Amino acid sequence: MSTVKVTGKKNRQSTRKLTVNILVHLFLAVLAVIWLLPIFWIVLTSFRAEPGAYTNTFLPQGYTLNNYVKLLTDRNVLNFPKMFGNTLIIAICCCIFSTFFVLSVAYSLSRMRFAFRKPYMNLAMILGLFPGFMTMVAQYFILKAMGLTEGSAIRFGLIIVYSACTGLGFQIAKGYFDTIPRSIDEAAMIDGATQWQVFTRITMPLAKPIVIYTVMTSFIAPWVDFIFAKVICRANADQFTVAIGLWNMLQKEYIYQWYTCFAAGAVLISIPIAALFLYMQRFYVEGMGGAVKG
Image (tube, rainbow, N blue to C red; front, side, top):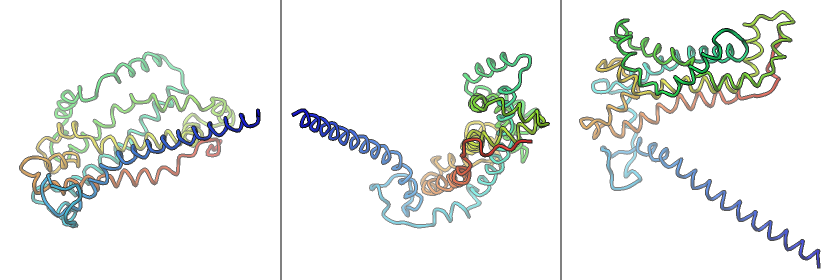
């Protein structure tokens, strides 16, 4: 009798577990559809043959590659290739500088002890509570005084704006560095390694996940930024970034002819980010295998 009861209880538990799993998977499937639907729609719109922002049907009535051709070849109204090149240069430079700044500051605060270390971390946390765009007017006039708001110097000004303050965003990287045992550093220094060698040959191989995270965020931030780019570029069309270009495509004088090109541009600007992620994800290797003493 007791065996029957145990078997019945197990069956009910299995049924309940199966039901919960089905509901969870259905919920996740709905979330996946909600997340993928806008991406699917923007890709379809980029191939839509009908101009304008509004259509009577969700699916396009005709498909064409002319939207991409127009986007990449038209130089008279909105020079998208020029904007793409400007943004790519700025994003790559900012990625290099910002990654170095963030990791250097994070490593210094994690491994070294010096005067005003604690006050600096507290001040950085307080400053991080305020949105960055609160300082954009002051930054614009500083760059204007330096002659970095006209012509090709605008790109250099944007690189300074995006890179200069990144050292304040050290908290995540510092938290990761704190998890790496200090005994590894001490052993390397006993063997004759300098602080720079410990940083580059010991800590960096062990911190690949946070390095990749920093590289990705440092590249994406200037790639998608609109506010600072618009303030500094103003009417200098030759120095526009892709964010400004896509925004201009939605203005009332352009939206009818350029809306589908806007969708094509949205697809194209996602390619560098996707390519960078696909390339960098293979370096997400945690553990001790990447360390090199010496």
